[in-house]
Length: 360
Ligand SMILES: *Cc1c(COP(=O)(O)O)cnc(C)c1O
Image (tube, rainbow, N blue to C red; front, side, top):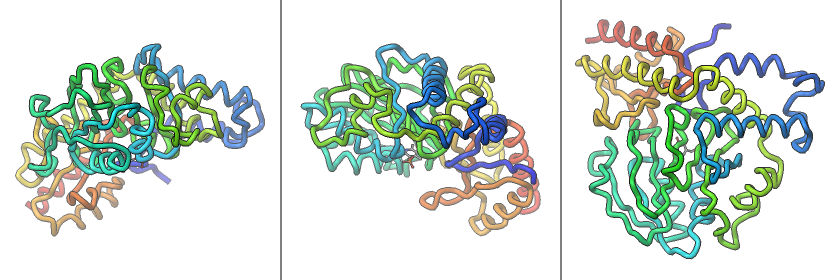
């Protein structure tokens, strides 16, 4: 059976080389005679896998020494609550930037734990842009400023890093982490569910600056306490071992591709191909402001909604799947993460051209 081009927003496509290596190592990892899934997380083989994954991630993102890297469970959505639980400290409120479905959920969870000040929003234009820093009404006494640096559903990406002074900046980078180099030192905390651009679902990565540790609410569960997990190398209990292993293979693969600068070049080329086509076409339309368009998630609409079904059916027949847009937005969405080769985007544009010719 041939592999298809998978445009899923998440769980998303993984590099074929990673899947092949995992297949090769499935029954006998490195001469242990067991699968990684069957190993003790306290044994040498897994501890090595875990340590190498962390070291490679640190190298890829050039994570400074005064940051901890945590490999947790619960998804990015668990972090919506765990961030205030862990870093609110003696503060009473936090600032949030409201730019779409994911920041909405983050806000709603935080509201259960603290006062939320929505410091900026793009709701006025249906979440189609990233509000300029000049419009943000930040509170200097906030515990932190939270924003969703890439809104997976709306396809809006911040291509700049907000300036928040002494207030720690917190980013939900789930759907574009590792798609470009990032100056981690500008952040207090960065988090990401793995299943978009890192690896399998079940693993959540938290990169947190040391001074934000040790402020957790007394009610915080041990497994979700950043400081406790940091001190235990994220192994206060059984970590998602297989997901960590695959993420580690992806990190090694990224290094082999030339690291994040090389990935960024490729991602820019992929996104340009698709957006340039959308922009010259009368048949397709991108709903997102030009400067704020995501390189990873590309929503677009056809001239008529009535053609959506035919478009998806034809795409499937041509070996391209998961192009249906999120139910809250409609239309189409092509997610073109690191693992999507440029050939996949070329095939999509070619199919879109043919479809346009037939239906214009
Ligand atoms: C997918 C996604 C989430 C939710 O991730 P889970 O791992 O399902 O909890 C949160 N934020 C963003 C930006 C996402 O893309």
